[in-house]
Image (cartoon, rainbow, N blue to C red; front, side, top):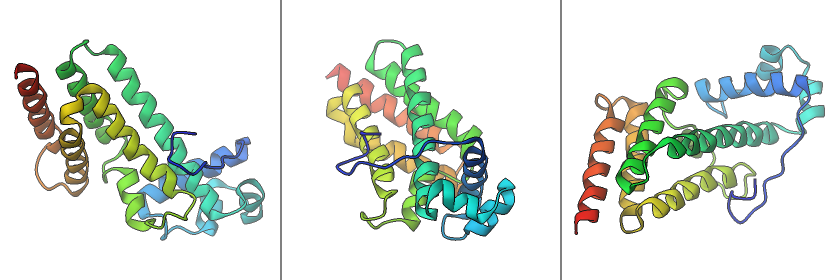
Amino acid sequence: MGDNGARQVRRISMTPGARRALAAASRLFYERGIHAVGVDLIAAEAGVTKKTLYDRFGSKEQIVVEYLAERDERWRAYVMERLEAAGPGAVDRVRAVFDASREWMDDNSPKGCAMVNAHAEISDPAHPAYAIIAGQKAWMLRLFTDLAPDRARALMLLHEGALVAHGLRVFADPIAVAREEATALVGGAQGS
């Protein structure tokens, strides 16, 4: 995971028990919040002992790192798969990102972006998971820069705002609204 910012993120190898624990932790962290979930609850949900969790992960912080890193890896692969299937033009590719976001949020993130939610709890750059959170958003900005260099920051703002509005249920289908605005923004830039 060298793409997470200046700081290298330490990862662990996963045993079957660690994978079960990570699956339980991931579900609990997303549903309840990182600070609200303790190691005792993760162990109970995973059917392992607290000692096993500490033996496998070393700390709750490392469980958080693994949760966010795994989610980030899945997200990036998901977006890249959609981009590979998109047309060659900037408008088609930008639409593909927003379509991927909409599908991802509907299937995986009814409470909003896991990285944004995690950042609400982890804002200290010294926390080992912070590099993953910031790294994903930096990756998104680079992606938009590759797709539409002159409109990258505006696309990023539309995208991230749509994710937050989705999680808060501010209005119906904010990602579709942002997609249309992004289409107009990029389409207008191509015509100038």
